[in-house]
Image: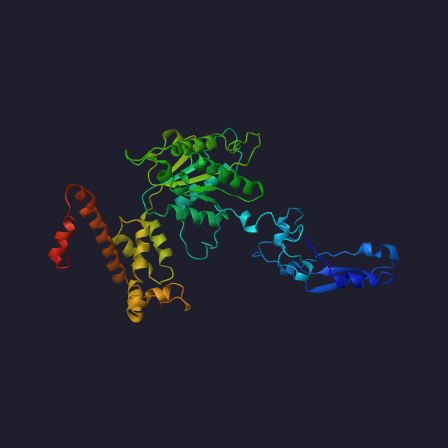
Length: 437
């Protein structure tokens, strides 16, 4: 596997020893460091074939191979593609590694081009860091994924699981937690990839990502295709939403994959080659905007996600886990804002750092903010964790609720169509004395 290039001096030394019967085989002991040579003596060999027995091989030290090493399986890799040249770069001494671009050392692709742009990898362990997974959510997701990898007799298992519900309820994040729990690195897609200036590109991309996930499964790794906010990219949100050919082809492609999950071909390829079945997980806010035949029960299993009070408390415990907020304060906070979404409590925590940032700006001056934060030689500013008391969290929560009410009450869009005014916003500001003309 390891390739080496003998220098001119090394060749001369080998030729000088051809007449010696005691010269043995030099075996390179590198363990991917290339720093030491191990002398292996052998019995007398005839001078005419001594040079032909010269072997340079790599010796593996398993103790130096860790799970964090991306190329830890390099020693046992028997593939012959030219990617091996790039992979071995820097792992052996430069004496034994020819420069890139010399002869056969032209790598066809960079090693990072083999890493999918849709592959999502998780580095956290939710069982250790205190993240909360709702039991009902985890049950639905794990059962659906497991069923799609089983061969159940005379049972038609829907390929797609559609998780939908209110905005900001943690659907995507709960999915990521379950994937991390199961050791799955999903192939990701978002609603923004379901539209393109070129007709047919989104449908082709779905097939490519599906086949990519199937390829990972064929190599022994569990994988799923995860599409975020499907309704935003393929649904019709009112009469003003333009229904393009890409919307139509995305719905048709998902329907076709759901009906034939083991025979997904790229456009222009019609060879009968079966691929592993890949579960598809989609999220959204309103699946009634999708094409009705796509969401029928045979193709998509639907799950409406509405977190209970216990789920909200559990999620908020994970949000404030680093701030030492007592559980009774978290319960009080959740009960005070019971109708709010999950991300509302994350916004409350973010507000707690406003005072720290404001004090830092007043210290350095507004005119120096850009110099300190953009392309600065100094380290970015750090702050001590603000003390989060229940009164302060409730205050921040009321401020957020007030901004929500302003959006619902003022409705500037309607006012703009009727008159050139800011509606009730001006009147409120003038009464409060905070209006500046």
